[in-house]
Image (cartoon, rainbow, N blue to C red; front, side):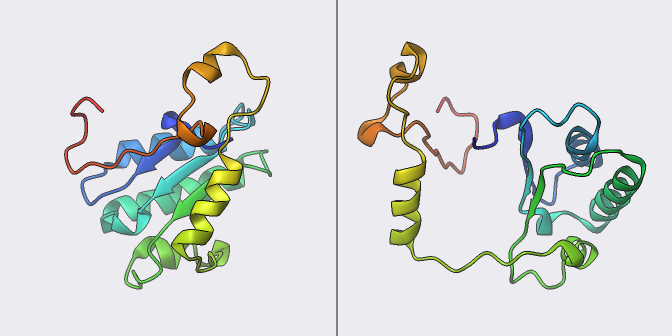
Length: 145
């Protein structure tokens, strides 16, 4: 399943230490094994102080935790070479293959379909083309979308 709203933190230079710490704790704490996928999006935009805190909490919790198969993803812009996050987590780096827009659309159309025989609640939210996920992008968040 795709991550839900409580599992994703979209980073900006204004993202605070507490927000990052809470997400890392959720991802690496006992009880986080309930199939959730925790994600930091745009982590390369974090300011230096918050990036250092992310690194510190992550490695401290990994060493002290008994969880070995956590689900924690950090997404960064590959062109952000000067980001502290990219340097700190270099050992965990995985390069995403370059895909065309058409390849991505084809993949999403096959992966994000409402399964047949689902509960009426899921059917109530069906979108055109039987997709059950919809992305809304806006420069002005929280304006009733």
